[in-house]
Each structure stands twice: as C-alpha cells, then as structure tokens.
Image (cartoon, rainbow, N blue to C red):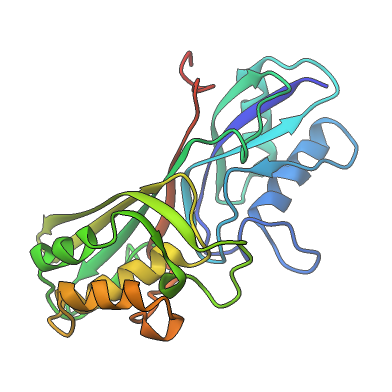
Length: 257
C-alpha cells in the first residue's frame, strides 16, 4: 500500500486533542473521515505527536497508507476539500517509502508557545495565545530557561498521568523571544527536543512565567528541576498558546516540494 507523509495545520480549539476518540471530535478523526471519502474503508493514521485538547498544529506530521497510487498534490487537495469546514489543512504531502513512520522516524520536535502581556482580554487572538495581565521580564525568563537545557530527569515538569517509562530527556533548545506589540509584549517560547513528556512544555512555560513576574528566580528553577518532584513545579499554563511547530526527519520527506 503506497504510504504518504502529510504536513498538517490545525486550530485545536474545537477538538479534544489529536487522538481519535469515540465520543469527541479529534484532529485524527477528522483526517481519517476525509480519507474515507477518498477510499471507502476504515483508515488509521499515525502522527509525530499526540497534542492535547486546545493545542494547535503548525507543522504536525502524519502518515497514511492508501490502496492506490495518488499524485501527492492531488491527494492533499482532495483531503482539504473533504476536511471543510473543519479548521484542519494539509499544507504538504509527499510519497514516502514503507519504512517511514511519522512518530518513530522523527529526529526532533519543536513547539512554539505564545504568551501575550496586556491588561485587556484578547479578542482576535482569543484561544490562540495565553494572556497575562502583567508585564514580564524576558531576560530573567531566559536565564531560568537556560537552567533546563541539556539531559535531565524532568520528573518535576511532567504530568502525573504521563505514561513515559522514564523522565530522562534531552532538551536541545528553550529560547525566550520577546516581540514588541502596539498593545503590549508578546513572548514566544521556542522549545526543541527529540521527544517530550506529557505537559512538559506547558510546565516549563508556567514556571518561567513566575520567573518573569519576579515570584521565582532562576535558582528556583534549578531547585525545582533537582527536586524531581511534581509538587515543585510552577503552575501549568493553559493549552491554547501551544503549537506543535515543526518535526524533523532525515531526510525530510517534504524537501523536494
């Protein structure tokens, strides 16, 4: 069966997450239903990461197996037609060999988290960023973020329901980028690793928000990390500012598009 890699963009607000569920809408379910319109049978796709309810996708990657050969561009166009009006789009599609697996072939994943500092509620960006009503110090936040780079036991920064066998992970990047806006300050967190624990990025951002607000110091971040205790984590921020931004492969199946 020919295999295709799909690059997927979605607004996670109306979904209960990526993973298919019997009683709730999911991104996976929407794509599998669209595939069923093209080849009338049950479809199962696999993704690079299972995002939670309310989390968005900019560069999620999934793969699907088809019964017939499709031109990759025509397959993406057909899927986008049948995905309407769901806020899901296939932004790229590529034919791949059978050894390619969206999850297991991935060499890294990068997340973006958007935080906006302003007094007024967000209107046009409601559900797309986390608003805090006070200013934050991005320099202090970067100093705290630097304490998390490298290979550590991240027990403190993972959900109590995380199913990973080990909390050991290598964090390659955690950049805090301030972006001036007419209405305040946006802070973008760029977080990259080979793999992540459940709620790890949201735990990082919620903790670093406390550093930016002056309630924590970078030393407190180190102490929390070394505690290896979920109770030592700062607040976990909401999901709606989080985006699965990109997934890396070697070679990248979308390079030639």
